[in-house]
Length: 238
View 1 (cartoon, rainbow, N blue to C red):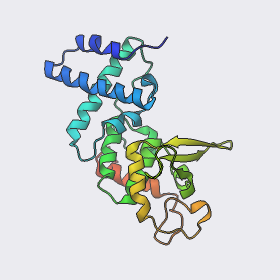
View 2 (cartoon, rainbow, N blue to C red):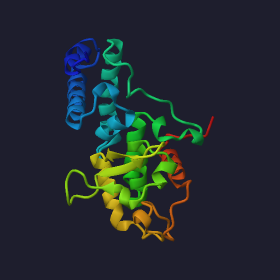
View 3 (spheres, one colour):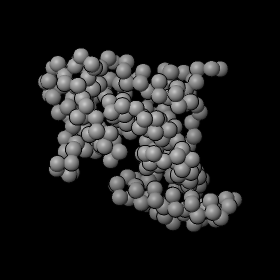
């Protein structure tokens, strides 16, 4: 039988040495995170780093506020792991990367992802949509550039823009992936600015270069590298 995470809140905070104000904030942040899991149908003990990052990130909010939300959830999961209620801590810190080859969407912790999301918020529509899809869905460059316009669809709210993405399985067939609200907003904000594709088969590639051809295969990785370097998350200095 699975644990009720809400029942872990009080014993977790009871054994901490945080100041009373910090405990109150941590309880509120973690309770809000658990509410998000329940409302979104996420299993709280099986989430990934990007789920926490998308919850913690508030466009326009200071990094310090995001850091507090991530820190609260990290502490809660550390306690849950010690109690045997969870098998891993999805909010655990990861070291800053020093090798560009390590830059994969699954290689960041929630705080790092949130920092990157904030950086992508300052870029153009295309870069923002590309970055959000990479980070939130864990898409590698090849999978991202294989997405066509017709792979986007509306499954929940007719007339409110695309909120579902069709992705192929390696062995054939497709799966439908619901776009988190922030990701859907980024994609839908980009679509009116998308350059018309030369080849409109299946709607044409979602991301097109200036000439209308599909983006070069290095585009998503080079974009992520540039943003990670500018954000201080990637350093080639030893």
